[in-house]
Amino acid sequence: MTMLDRMRQYICKYLILFNIFCASGAAVHDVFAAAPAPETEINRWIATHARHAKSSEIAGARYRVIGDLNGDTRDDVAVLYTLKSHAATDGELRYLAVFVHDRRGLHYRAHALVGGPGIGEVNRATVLKRSVVLEMLVHARGDPVCCPTRPATRRYRLVDRKLVLERSR
Image: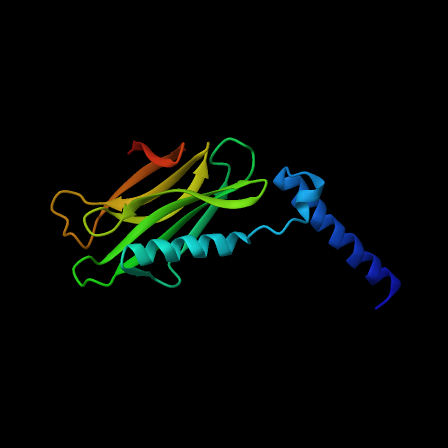
């Protein structure tokens, strides 16, 4: 490794730490504090939810979007995930969970049932103006329970520790 390569490596290492510091809004000593990794916190919470719901998460069906959801200018995480019930009649249910960043890391705040048989099928999620916007298909008159066909938009806002449906279209 040449001297130039070592210098690049050194600079990159400290730029990464600087970016973490700036993005988190944390004090200098907090950058080095041991906080749970974001994915660990999300996995832990979803596993607990699945256990309480007597379900299991469908692998590969998780989708996340990032943006400020509580107005503190830190990027928070909204996660769509699907649980399959162990009871044959319940089927697959799609949930939206919100995890917010604070100076100590990522923490669960709220979740809501957003999709499943008779509810609708979520196709896409985005964060816009502190809300999670879901583009989905809902049931039109005459649609079978399995197969919604009418496009719709649902907008969820984090209020205290609840996800509140703001607007349906």
